[in-house]
Length: 424
Image (cartoon, rainbow, N blue to C red; front, side, top):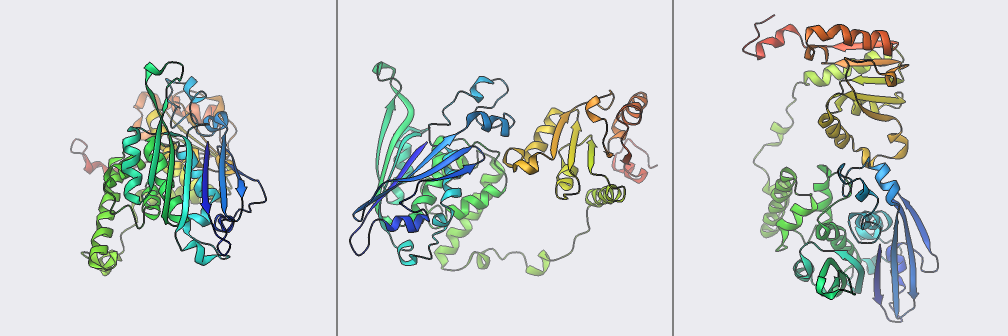
């Protein structure tokens, strides 16, 4: 993937100030490691009158698949080859947006101690992206960028130049020019709109993406005519997150209209009511008791048998004393949800090496589960039919044989929550 940022200057305001604003020296080519490849920053030209900074992202497609466990774009189980043969190394997408935020993080926030006055003022800017997926075509590109003050030049890329009758591909070549944008504003526009045009992200979209969107969209997204489309696509069409983001954007718009703070508008609930203490849920207290038992027994390698959606696994990961954590469940769907909630595809290598999710049934012996310090069966045994309990007993105590076993079940008083179960 390739992107260039170009500015022009004068003797008293040289174009090479771009190096200060990006915190990357024009005389050096620099490389930055990412979880999906290597980002290179270089300057094809760096003169007083004109300066161009280029971001070249080399994507390791194989490493990306291995890291993401085959999840995300191109990683569907029925498209195994597409995990390795796809456009990700070449076409601007969420991978490039993440690289922008990582490599130019200070510039994205508008921070520059060496040239603070330059960071705060508009620059003559030209952005070029030679290959950009645009689901919606050139018309959508213009609808997204022109309201932000960009002069847009967008050219469809033919599907095959040898066969013009095949028409255009979904890719475009994009050039943006503006004299009214700061560098930080330009980078924030790109950070949000590149994955929006691609209409896909290479990672699981979690609730914290709403905060990222609102931070990057500050000052321009609340009033954008395509606000709903941008929000929906950026959040991968997750309805609950999109609704939350739209509600918060409306509050921001109302606050700006009234020239007041969001907190003054969103004041229907008294502060005292928000501070009322709520009882700790039993599920949380149960996990705390399990963690205490594991600590008391000096367990480092732990099995969570019947891990479900990974609530206990997440708590175990917070404590470095648990060096190896294995979650086991018979439900593939539960394991998929656990993987998303734990953000395994975005986890650091050292942290990811501590955890493993396995599909398996506790009614059968499994040699993968042997030799652990402790095994936890939290709210598991009551789900088994009585004839299967001996099989579970042998699988855990006879085959796996962990040094410690922690078992929890609901109290008998819990039965009253079901009409068909008498108390006790």
